[in-house]
Length: 253
Image (cartoon, rainbow, N blue to C red; front, top):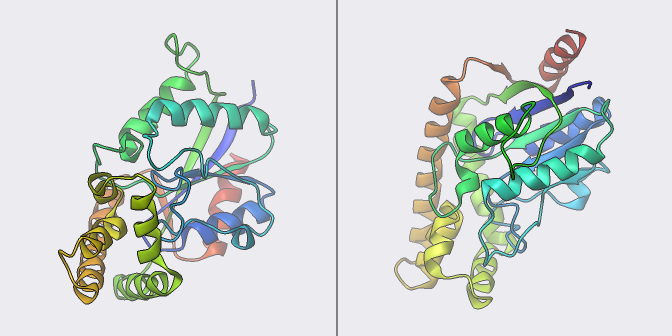
């Protein structure tokens, strides 16, 4: 069986992974599968930076809005859903896996454990996966990392927080809580939901929440960079044309 070509797009928060994934998928006539531990949940749009239909530019996207935000979406379910999707995609179609999974484990959302996801996918794509584990087609993988100079990255993070506040991120968090998502779970959904939950509970002023969110996001991005730099399989690029060159070379091999 011909192995599937999977191009993983990774990098720190606010580096532009979603846009690069779309651009590359259009260039190579591929599709995008999301590997975001929060974008699998319906109704979590602004705080997660979920890609819009317009931003998709006609490129098929999969594994978005898969579950209620009141439920837990596990690694096992992700692999099962990924297997179902990949089997429907023609074998010659490149798959761009936009990986926004946090580089640290969030215990209440086990899809956020990147190593666990990678290991689960590795097992599922082996010739003899364990009973109960969905079988994935064989895959060959290249990891493309999007690097952004640190000053520019921190500036983008601050601008993104300001933009999301204007888009209604506070209202989104309040709505999720009204719909039955406990504060504790919102706190575990990531920095945006954590600090705005504290604001909505009266623990912080809005200005304090925004300031602390920006600061925590800066620290998070630095940890992400440190984490990814340990992975020597990553091909780091700063521009789309560099990514295209790396992918063309990889596909030829």
